[in-house]
Length: 124
Image 1 (cartoon, helix red, strand yellow):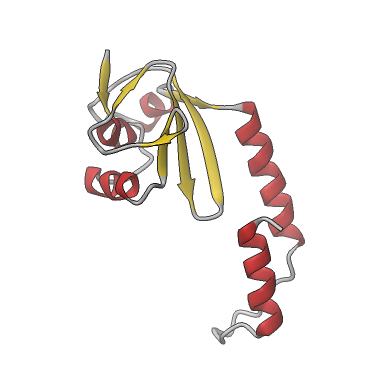
Image 2 (cartoon, rainbow, N blue to C red):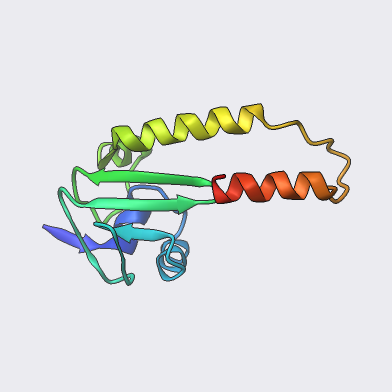
């Protein structure tokens, strides 16, 4: 059994609408088995889906296929995250916790703030 990747991402509740899922696939934020794909690519049980959202990179293994959106508890049974992805997410969380807190007075960041943000984004 297989379904389109945009339908699967929507049914697994990674995106609120199918249009947002299609946009993410077209912007190369979604990978299937290590390759960029089109929204009509098919997902099968056992495939690896990589999802890039901001600084976070998720590696998901497909456990079941459903092209209808159900409850959140049903959606959580459709996939599981790889151990490497969990470890990467935890290390990113620690890196972000060690960053200096930005004063929230809605000013533009100074030169040092911009440089540290760029370093964090590049992974240096």
